Length: 60
Image (cartoon, rainbow, N blue to C red; front, side, top):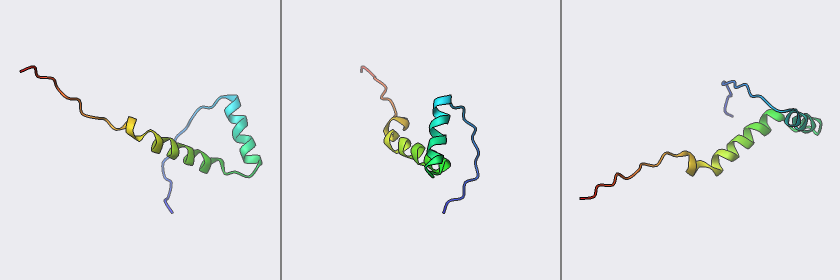
């Protein structure tokens, strides 16, 4: 299993915090949930995140 060594602090709205508390109440690991959602988002948007080289137009 991968060892997590990096720490990032995020700010949440009250509604987001309440949602995470509800997840915790139904025995879902919040930290793993956040990791999974970030991973899913990155996989979905990978094509937008990769910088594509632009063609230089030379008229002659």
